[in-house]
Image (cartoon, rainbow, N blue to C red; front, side, top):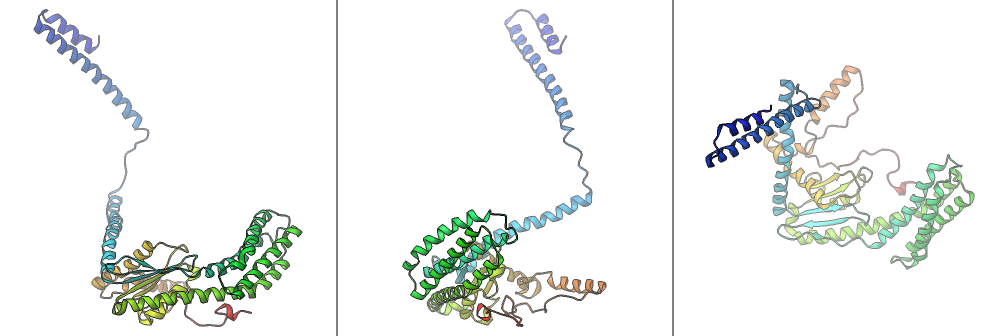
Length: 385
């Protein structure tokens, strides 16, 4: 007999059939039901515990591991605190200093001026002729990128579909190039480049193969024409942006000496970076790496907010360097770099290796932020045949 049945029978036999007895019997029935539920719950709990044992084991973290995790958690939390503080620092900098951002773009760049208490001012874009010149030049590069992987694979025809599709686009561009808004000699050169591209594509399609000789002849024909377009595009871009900064410097007046600026670059565009070089003409050598920064990013383009965050973080970190180490520009460098340099020299000595390290430069150096050591070899397209 179950416990619930025993309880129910005992209550039924021990009470008279009175009103009070009926109340008590109902009470006893409730107790019996509760007993049933609790007994099943206990069984379920036993089963659940057994099931959990198959996936849950005892943790075996040592005291040292726990202690290490507790310490490392400080660093994780630091980044959250740092992020919050960085936004306050950015707001404070923008409230007291003008800031200019030079951002790379396919349209020749963007310049944005932030002034305390005013809405951001974005400069007009570079004339569209810049984009036309670059687009024509890039079309030749695109053709070579498509065909070069197949130079050693004459039987592979998988290049043909994409190249012929690009030819169709190129024909449309050629049909309209004379209507573009740029000087006649620029249009003529661009027209010839497009015609040569189409002729090369047609030659490859007719032969059904890509030959090294044909590619070299194509490159030799296009090279001098591409140089012209590159020169004109650079002149257009530089003249436009120097005109913009002329106006902004005049507008800011005495505030110019409190102005910060930054431009972004990826690795392949850092040497002779155009936007940074334009800014340097107005900020002067003493501002380089102080109020004027070149910031490397991992993609061609970045957002104004991302670049502004990077710039204000650099400025904000300088207060940390000054407070803890007595040098505000220490944090512009890899903090462990000096000690790591000494460690590398020591390890090299142990192994009999010749150190390969750049000269040590002082914190706060105003040196140009990219390669500056002269040497033999071409330094521009004009130096190449």
